[in-house]
Image 1 (cartoon, rainbow, N blue to C red):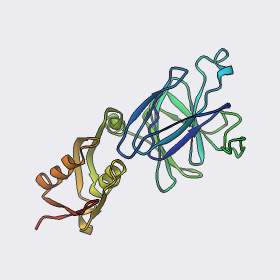
Image 2 (cartoon, helix red, strand yellow; image 1 turned 30 degrees about the vertical axis):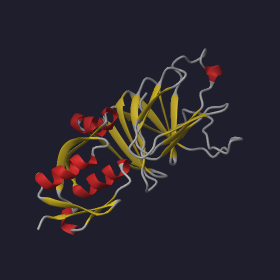
Image 3 (cartoon, one colour; image 1 turned 180 degrees about the vertical axis):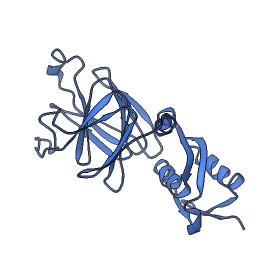
Length: 231
């Protein structure tokens, strides 16, 4: 089981939870007590609670992730969950199938919302599908295998782009650094950018922008970068 997030994900059943977190730019793989794995992307917090009493009954018990307004349940599946700063949740299924359902307000003694019935009626996503939602499903699309590979590249410590607008690329890499990156020329926002870069090697991306795309990348302070068209 692989879950990637850009925000906070919480999944619960009962008993005292374990907590894990990554710093900005850090990635980490957690092996849970039941043998499943969670890969944490940059700037992520999770709380894990596994119901030990269900192991003998359901050795392949569902694995549920709570994010935003929904819960995602799967067995033998690999999928990525990203909680955006806008409160939108993006889900991409790499293998198998997951069931999406709305959260049910039910506070635990820990003050955390859970879902009593993990398999509530909802929308199902199959491998190769991507969904975005807030309190309702905003979109469900099928994505090409090469796009799916790029979306999952962070699991290999890579950031891969193939023609995405510069504004989207900067927004994405900003999740991996504490630098404040500004595009000073409005007409550069839509400039298509391609390439593969290692997480944590942000300077390599800046070098590519200067050499390949003819841009000027300038430090305007210890924590600020300005990108403009080269003079």
